[in-house]
Image (cartoon, rainbow, N blue to C red; front, side, top):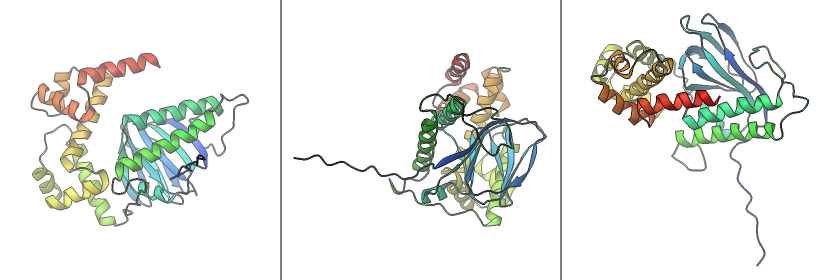
Length: 298
């Protein structure tokens, strides 16, 4: 009986990479904006930035990512308080499923963070530095690149995009549906207002009733806004932001866990530890040691 090959389906393909950057900006950085005919992802590795996409503002915190669609005018600036570090990668991809990313802020997973780090690492194996020049218009290959580095960049990019679409849209396995573009200005402004309110009260204990009252929004509408954009309710989103801040404080190594718990408005360090493990998948102690181990390996 003759063998018959199975042609593997390709959901998306990164045709080429335009730029790969890792920026360490000052807290006063302000980029007035541009548009171009390729996709560009912005991922915050430290601090926060304010970006616009077609005049709609978004605040990106550490561990969050945003994709600017082709020909979408976008700008970026620091918040004036913290100096941000950013991963910026621009690329061509014509797959229809890329519409999933349009006008959507997402939190990256540890797997996706590792893939981004791998892309930057492989870029150093095949592309001439520097990687922090925002005016780079054409990357130059190294004279003797490491074998397979360019192909690994392509594979890592495609893997990251596929994983993000898969975890963000479970409605149709193998065929991701485009999400609705967030073009209704009133909903975007309302959502951003609530996000800003949560960030301002990140060190407090908040209930959904308090959030609704402070932002003049109904409970069902509030939950709908956050589920559409983050695939979770507003309280879980708020808890995740708290834990992200807790991770930052742990990495800075200036406070013990009890102090961090008190600073973030938790009723006890035991409750803080339970919430941390529920969201981060490990205890604060385990996280602290894993970061230390990672730092020692680099």
